[in-house]
Image (cartoon, rainbow, N blue to C red; front, side, top):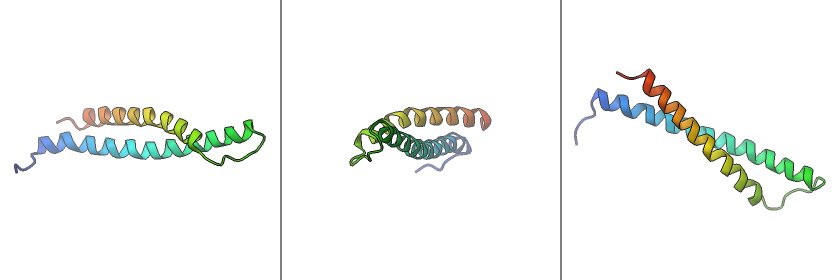
Length: 85
């Protein structure tokens, strides 16, 4: 195996940081949207609780994934500009 050069490390490090930021954004956004959709369900159905959260989970995930992608792209672009050698 060839050793990693400084140039390779400078290219890989922003990608790793961007993936970490995107995954943490995915977890937070999914949790917030899931909570909001469950509260919306309870409000629409006179306070009845959801037995199964598949409806809310599907919608929360479909909103969180594009936000995760946006966080990944913006973080990657920012770090590549900042740490360009």
